[in-house]
Amino acid sequence: MNMIYDIIILGGGPAGYTAALYACRAGFSTLVIEKMAAGGQMTLTSDIDNYPGFETGIDGFTLGMKMQQSAERFGAKTEFDEVLSVDFSNKIKKITTYSGEFLAKAVIIATGANPKELGLENEQSLTGRGIHYCAHCDGRFYKDKTVAVIGGGNSAVSDALYLSRIAKKVYLVHRRDTLKATQVYLKPLKDAENIEFLWNSTLCEVIFDNKVTGAKIKSTVTDNISEIEVDGIFISIGRKPATEFLKGILELDDNGYIIADETTKTNIPGVFAVGDVRTKTLRQVVTAVSDGAVAVHFAEEYLSNL
Image (cartoon, rainbow, N blue to C red; front, side, top):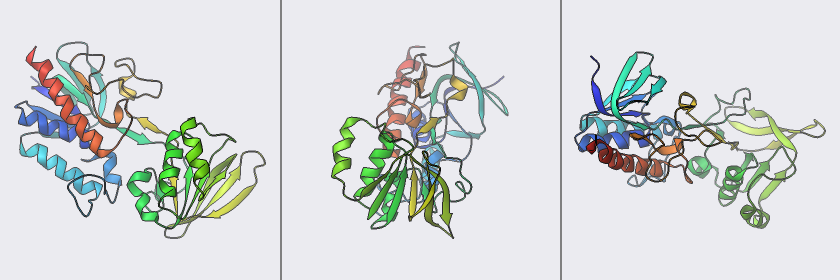
């Protein structure tokens, strides 16, 4: 018979492994199911400077490994596998993966969210070498340089404003002639002298040698293509939460994020959502870690009443 874990955690990023650490320290049998590698999206970041405790910064891969080791020190187990489906209809929850079925009394979902890509040629190979998806993570590399931000929503505008305080010049490239961002951003944008708007425009090609050196910009009105010189490109067209396997099972918002407040509770008792996958204002490593600790507090409360 399959072992019934007290808690199974789906996802081995900072939220997932923090939850595992707290769960094991509380005496719960705990399994983490991770598709790729410890750290999740964090592993794509070469230098994390905004996580406390590392005065010279740390790369995302190393931090992820440290979090995994911390949890496993107290007994957490890790299964590298991909979740195919879940059944939360009974008190004992069932998770089906490529390698089999796993059972648990409580489940913490920490599957994260992936940045949406433009789908350009060489986009993936240039990620981290001039193409980025997180201004707060990688903006520091572009002090006094020129960058482009692609997008027109709140995230893109927020990234442009953040980068304008670091970079020499920021191009904001948007496919329409008005921003989708909320009104609160308009005055700061107008006041930022080093932000230049490229309206009715899309990024159609990245110019690079060993790293990004420029971008080809296509007009959505005339189809004309022009070139700009940039040192880096930040793509900010949204994120896609890893919740496809949860549709029709958990309550999701219009963008696919799991609806869960600061308690991390979902609409199903005994199922919790943490980190980037849940509805929240700020998605950072430090807020993901906080979620992981909070989820175990409420999971402990749930398990004590079974």
